[in-house]
Length: 342
Image: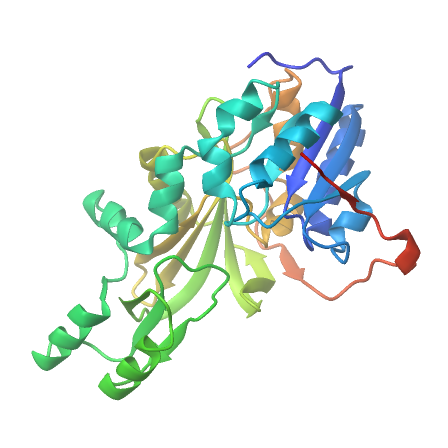
């Protein structure tokens, strides 16, 4: 795609923006520092979205499963000359990837990986197979039926971890300690798989991939406390081995451009076990940005033809993020959100 110029008008669209106020404001700050004439747009299904109220332009769209969803986004892109589309959750990644060319034909770059990458990351069974095949350490993953058979043979180690193979945000996860609990939760968790339970410290790695699909920076973050599936307390942990392995995973996967989030455990024995790959901005990414890995600035620089100067490990080690609840104030009559008709 043709690069923009610094003095061009730049409209950025965030889909499913929800509560991503911090991410939105990071892009706004970066645009200001770069001297860009920028407009930040957001979509959601409800006017009650906090981040939607902080957007310059706010749009109400159908749920991502609706057949009109992509056409609504295309309408926004066309009508408002959007040059960059930033997904924020898993739900619309595949649709955006499959329709990326339609957006590019309108001059809009989409920060999304290829459809086969999205599908591999979404299906945790395939993620396990990919990681094993490429030689990375990862918890043993199997179907519930295979786990029960392994237990009958005396080969299953308890406890185990149950999750959806297509799940996200830690929904429907369960720790099971014996066969009875496994059978109980397997009936209640849709599309359940059984994973080896890993003892260790959980980390997230935010990986920046430039527009040429090259990994430029990896920021490991220790997950100290998680609330509702999203990290609430975290600390930057500059671990060179972890950074190198995360880089290799993303390079072999062929993900990008943009930010990809990897989940892993650092075991008591010092082993790195990867558990998930999320091809999008993670909820804890404000910590990496604050530590000096300024992903929004780099993205906007690339978008406007200003090659960013990026150091692979050029971020502050040990920085803590201690989250708290904040508020967006407005009158109900002033809530933003224009319906999009196509």
